[in-house]
Image (cartoon, rainbow, N blue to C red; front, side):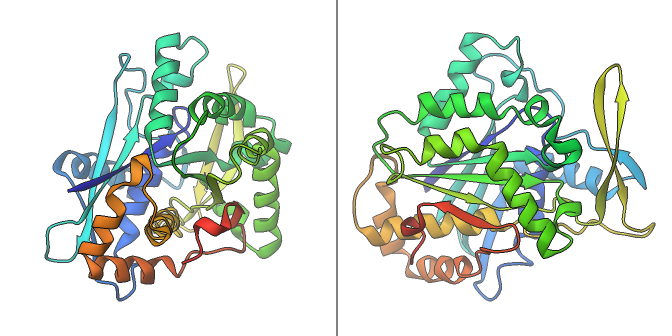
Length: 323
């Protein structure tokens, strides 16, 4: 089976696992009439099911604690979430492997070996999804953005990982926990602007002469729970603790736009196939889509509904999305 690797990038507690959980849980309700199926392997299913239970069992007032615990790990530690993508009732045609490394690898005391490990991971993957803690970016004029989201560290990773690219890449900036900031068009525009400002150095790097033609960058906000909004920041031992509340006592888990990163990713892959060129990490595309016409048309249909307004945007690389 053909395999595509995607790196989930971000410090511990930002929300990488919750993003994957929402993407999987909501996939089938957002695929329209394409008859596509997203199937996790046994281990991935167990982890995501546990996280889904946690998200559905939130108290009325709670603190977001991020994903699965155990984020330090040993050098080389890597958790892969495997999803098979294909027609319902059939064997998957494409294996999507979301690589999730320990968030502690971004910590100040992380060893050089761990930092090199993350850079190598980013370099070898076709796409990188950067989970962004939206309240840290937005509240108190972004006072805690650098501390929690580590944008400079992330930019430094790309400086090394994206040297001498031999294939196109996709970078997905995915604000999570952003329910409060998508209430109306004005708020959504502000969120998008703050993403551009908060990741200005990264965007500047990706738009440099050597990378502009090779990298597509998009912003895809995800309401990871849907039924909560940011409430307040509580300080404990000089550190911020972000509190959230349910929109109502009986509000249920209802994420929104969690499938958008996947829509953009598959749209990117289909475009690369249409280009009919061979790149190092995409040699399988011609064989994949040529041998499975149903998958090609299903992906085309699914990709049509990529959002590009109200907080969503293609920052660069539109040509890699025109199908």
